[in-house]
Image (cartoon, rainbow, N blue to C red; front, side, top):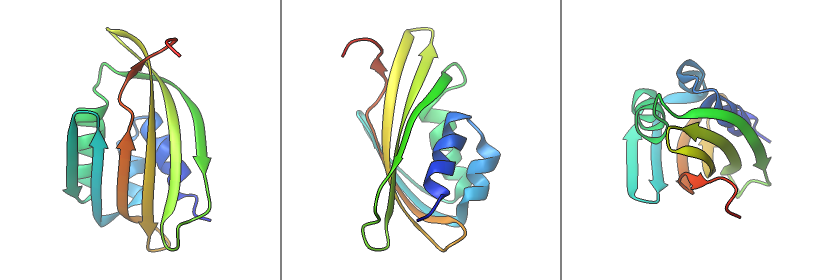
Length: 124
């Protein structure tokens, strides 16, 4: 089973653009869905721009990576889900993302991410 998914979750939680670049292929095909918008791009720069320029802004503090879960692949497609504890000027939030990805063995070449959005913490 690939460790790229959990490593990507850790890099996202750390807001570590350099590691995201290392984990994905130069032509990574990315698509994402958040509560208000669909996103897409090709290449690590486009992915990093969506992740750290739109989804998680500079003012969004990732306080913890609460959970990382992987499961059996769906044929050639791996999956990872991860939950983040977040804080910004509006308060405390939790967000979860579910990602499906394919690799060339070394890097992620195909990535699809579904995001719950920032949900107010403590409302469950």
